[in-house]
Image (cartoon, rainbow, N blue to C red):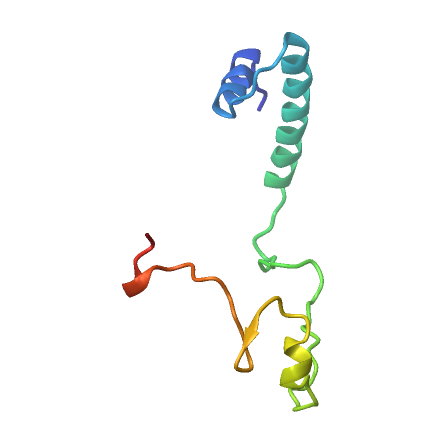
Length: 101
């Protein structure tokens, strides 16, 4: 399959791209090359090939979920811009009653 200059201009219009005549010619050649590769792939017999999401097996490496020491409350609040009664103080972003006004 090969794209005509008119089809390349139509694709550019859909993508909201303003292309010069030279860019249309270059893009047309690149798109036709891509379509050629797709045609080659479509010719392959892939009936016995399982679909995959990755080319190689993927394994999640996660650490064991074990309790370990953490920051004390005082250390966690040490650099907070505002703290009160052992908690972070943040500006109110939602009005009373859940209104966004």
